[in-house]
Amino acid sequence: MTRSPVLEISDLRTYFYSRAKQAFIRSVDGVSLSIARGETLGVVGESGSGKSVTALSALGLIGGSPGVITGAVEFAGGDGARAGGNGRRNLLQDLARHVTVTERDGRIVAVAKDEPGWQAQVERSMRGVRGKEIAMIFQNPKSSLNPFLTVGQQISEAIRLHTPVKDSREAKERAIAWLERVHMDSPRLRFDQYPDGLSGGMCQRAMIAMALASEPSLLIADEPTTGLDATIQSRIVALLAELKSGLGVTTLLITHDIRVVSRLADTVAVMYGGTVMEHGPARDVLAPSVEPKHPYTSALLASLPSAQKNGGPHAIDGRLSVIRGEVVDTMDVPRGCRFYARCDRVTDTIRARCMSQEPALAAVTAGHQIRCYLYGDEPRDGARAG
Image (tube, rainbow, N blue to C red; front, side, top):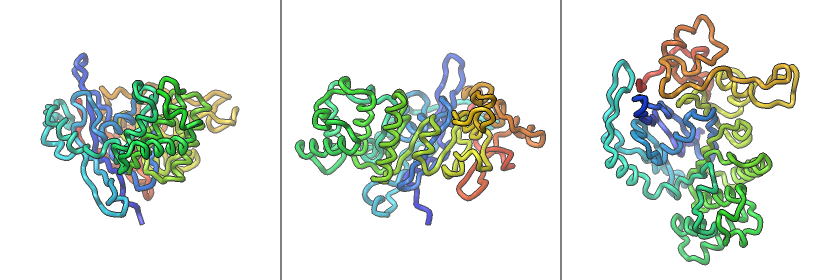
């Protein structure tokens, strides 16, 4: 029996407007994703593919204008949902009331947004959700922690704010217990230290402890190993794997490191140019030998360092494989396939369609979808900014 999703994102579009170039930056452009209860969804792709903006949009944390303009974020959190109830709600409820979109030739050319109304609606929808039901681990742990409060004060505050525990002494003991759970050395000592007195790895452990101390229904980990040295990265990944096994928390994992995703994720979404190019079980998406696979996914896997040198599948004459060309400019997205200009698998049969119409995200096997004319014939519906 398929488990119901904790988070289901549908046709999410987050655009920013460049006054200098008088054009939209389509950071997130029609993204649809879902995460089943107890699973980890890994979102992977090159920098600028829209991974982090997708997560921030789902939490209503985008400050730039116009920001989210279309989409739904269905969330099933809370005690009722944990017990098997529905408890679903759209975190972007009544979005359409505050946005007017103008289209021309199938593309969005203008957006009028009631920013105060939109922000007020977001705050109403997110009340009791951010920090409590959905917790987030950000990219830079040192800058994410408050430098004027001790680590213990910040974790204790989260416990008292988002759990039934209100007594300060009990909150302190729980905070120390969570520091122990994330393998912080000398947790009672670290409890009274400020973030500046901790290393990057320690700050990340403190961030993980604070996020989990609220007992969230969903954890969003945004590049949790970025900025850490290789040894500390490995330890943080090992910690996340241990917590996943022990706590079974539903997780949205965002990273550009495929090796992190392959170790932690149950399902994988590959993003490029603001949209999802492939989505499916990790065992199918990340195994180089498994077909079918999107050409972009294949290129990412081929660029990974391999122990095999000359003649190995990930190297040519001892050199790493690279993806030719430049990452697509989301301010000037082509009408056809976004990866067409860098793709080395285009055939004469599909070339015209690749250049003129964007393919739909089509099912190739049960639970496995690919956006490519090599595997599907339908163009993608929906307007994009021009």
